[in-house]
Image: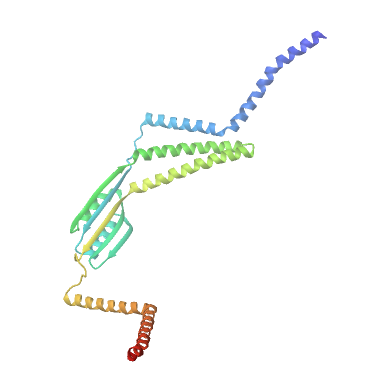
Amino acid sequence: MKHSLIFALCAATMLLPACRNNSAPAVQELKMEEAPPIAAVAAEGALASSGSDAGQGTALPISQKIIKNAVLRFSTSDFESCKKRIADTVKKYGGYIASEKQENTSMQWRNEVAIKVPAAAFEQCVESITSGASGIDEKSITSADVTEEYVDLDARMKARLAVEQRYVQILQQAKNVKEILEVEAQLKSIREEIESAKGRLQYMDHHVAYSNISLEYYQTFANSDPQSPGFLQRSWLSFKDGWNRLLSLTLGIFSAWPLIVGIVFIFIFIKRGIRRWKSRKAPTNVNQ
């Protein structure tokens, strides 16, 4: 009996390691499925490092991304002619007018224009616009190099795209609802980052391809109001102004009729009171 018991214990001891070895792969696979973010982060880090290593090794040429802007302000002696000349110039260089705001007063006509022009024709367009100006008040040209930001953002977006593909693969291997929801939440966050990066890249591409010109031009007729060609015209304007003031006064009186009626009633009441007081006092003076 003792010998058989010892033999059974020895057999169980020998079989236990084999069972552990057989169950290890299943446990390891389950842990990998339960922790998709760790795998994704590792994949992202590997992609980022490999991308940077490749960039350092190959040193591919990168076209510069430069955003150019100009601010122009000048006066003109012929507003309508200047307006037509600017429109023709913008069209000639392949640009377009993004916005326009015109204000006309008796003393001055003014126009504010936002112009988009291809970067290759930026300098020529600026010179052509300012060539017909009577006097330039402001001419400012600036440029911003966004090459480094563009390259960095593009590399990050590509890394996010690779991570997105990895998450899609993990999602296909998910075994329950909890795992599916966790992976989909990570996918949503990554896709939002990708869309944001795409939008920023498109914004920079557009501003690099089309430079911006903020233009303001004006024509001044006189430094004081009223502005009119001669004495007769000014006299007519003065007569009209007096007539308008008279009409305004009349309408103001009409609108205040309740106050006027009240004042009339108070005046009548006071006048009658004075008459009664005088009539009562008169007989007393006669008897004396």
